[in-house]
Length: 265
Image (tube, rainbow, N blue to C red; front, top):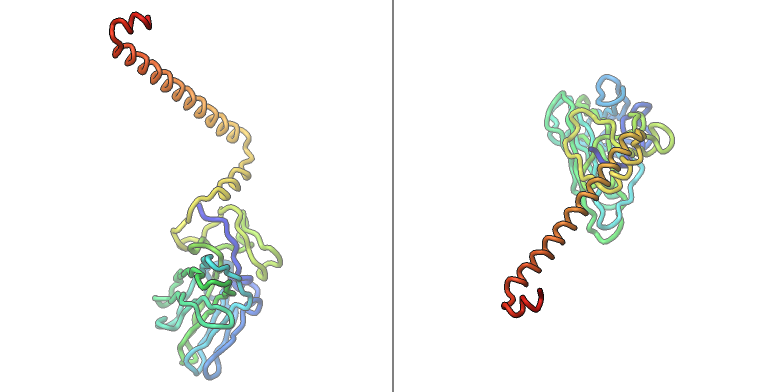
């Protein structure tokens, strides 16, 4: 079972545009482009494409930040498709807004195929940090491009299955579609091949699951089994207590001397 979560990438799959919640913030030289592409995509019908310019390096940044409290863990994930050697050409990176780069880098390792990447960071700095996702390529041939899709930023110990409000089921946008955070109240959707880490089933997860059970017959059956189990356990412990009492009495009688046994007779 996948975990309840919130995807804090407002425009995670670039279905409408690549300008809401994202911007090309830096490039060495000139000519790098950041565009919506419908040729290759992992979810929906589009992806974001970062094409190299004539300088080594170009960076696209998620503009919305996520406040990560001290002691909390933030996880990022996404899909990358590189058109050429991806070594230092296709990167999703977690950054701390306004200061230094946090050391969470997910780099593609293959060419011409979608690859899932993820990473997590525990904030042990002593203060809250505002984090965001950066997308980067470092080629300078004015031709190499990298496609990105299904990006996710969440407060979680590890990356969970991709979520956006257009997946349906228990997934929903908190505001405008493709321009707001997304929530998953109970996982009924899964992106094939994304990851196998399903996390830990929590009391909150079980409570939510129980709240979605509308079949009264199933609920009644579960309750009935629970009551039967409780009754069986109660009877077992009562019998065990009685057996212990009888054994104690028998041992006491056995150890008494004849006059004492007569006295207790």
